[in-house]
Length: 371
Image (tube, rainbow, N blue to C red; front, side, top):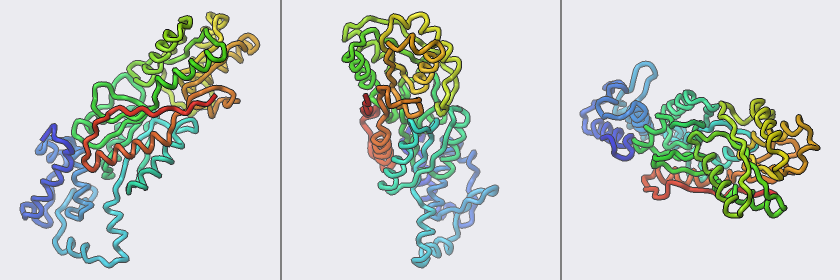
């Protein structure tokens, strides 16, 4: 069975056949999830999802602390004969769910995304259940397990930053469970990835600065450590600078730290690092591109501390929304198109759920350029 697509469907189909042919008689207690995991050679998560499907069809009853039992025949028939006024309750038991796990949510990214995911899911006949990892890998795993226990039909996830993948996500992908990754790309893993076209975003910012006569452009970014989004932005910056034959200025590469970008205040370590960068290279720059929203905050605070008048010649841009940046509308930036990302994520996920083969596993959405 390992390697087959949609393992949870195969497990549920096998159990259903045994129930219908009498091999599993009414009232029979099913083996424990761990035992069935060994029998079918799949993960416990897959077993949980298979059982949820059977429970939704009223073939089994799951009793917390006791286990799963084959439903009595008369109970199955009674459910089928329920009057119209109770039909809605039965339908709710089989509600189609999409699980969503986000690393964080803030006005600059996440709030609109959640709203649009819900709208798109409802239009497709699904409800969504949203959880957060708070940039914690263990919490992310716990939320995946929780959503699977809820009987979700598919998962949309914005994974935690990091240099390695969460094994819980990998396991779902390997077992054929419908998964869509947002804002990231899992290198070497064939799973649909929907994210902003980072190359186009950085190119447009560099072009904008050049059109304004800014030719000595610096870059402020964080060590990528395998994070594809940051790798793409950094690579695009170098490419565009070379294509336009602009001077190759020194970049400010900040150490990766564990943080969530919901704070209105910049990270102190970053402010100190950028202060040092400006004191060393600031006089040679006339523009700078911050590769994340939080870096623009840190840049502006570093400038304030040193003395604004010393760096008024440097025009900063951001590859993220500047909603929480003081006077943010004054700064050129590329905002991620959350509405388009959400609609595409639901479209791709529901196609997977219905068994459609997804050929394109990397979808890039153009950002919204705001000068």
